[in-house]
Length: 347
Image (tube, helix red, strand yellow):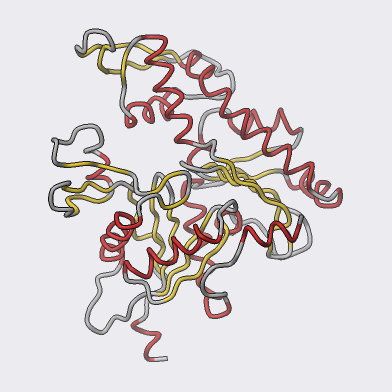
């Protein structure tokens, strides 16, 4: 028991766009963009999180700012380890008496066993004592306050930066799930491509994301709003200012939003009729940053015929769910949970 007093368990939402860390007893203690700025010559980490994100597209030749995760999985192991080390230090002011933390990390429901092991190894290398995995939609549902303990079916759509996870849950488990790469990052890339093709202006990833957040929509807005942006003229290379309208961005985002709606429909098709009737009664819950794009709930309601609602504090639901799972960490399975194999056996 004395050991438990000094121990600090962490729940981690290791997202493509942001990393959130929930500390047992304290709540969310870290909320940082998953970006690392590194000196190419020495390999030394210069900045992590918001400070590194501000350097995206603005760094001198010897410095590179990068996302070490892509499409919900680790693409650069070494940089992910260094980023987690810095964030672990930020999360817990450790002392010589503080043991290494036990951590619960969420993974997309489409990961392979190799990708699961990659996440576990990165967390261990960064200083975790033990690592437990939880499926992202399960964590999102718990964080959104859904009752998944009973036999009644609940549907969750978690639209993150790299992946969109769609799942039907009941009896504390995942009945049907799917994960696609169409999510927030794909929308940012679509906006950047459109602005270059239509207006001849090159913009960076940060500007594209700002456009998505401020005037992006996937359903017709009551009024057409505008936004001024700055970029580089593709022909002359000179700075150029441009006004974009929300109606044209809606056209750009329609395709990735349709992919998400199609995935929701295909998961409903695979779901048993009993659970579908529960979902039509309970509605569909949307979580993740992408769910907050204007009209996402309306679009999915129209396409599925089921009422969709955006969860409170949708950005943080997965982190809160990881935090709630810390209560039964002693009963969780350590190491890989073989999501891919379980899906094959369910099929």
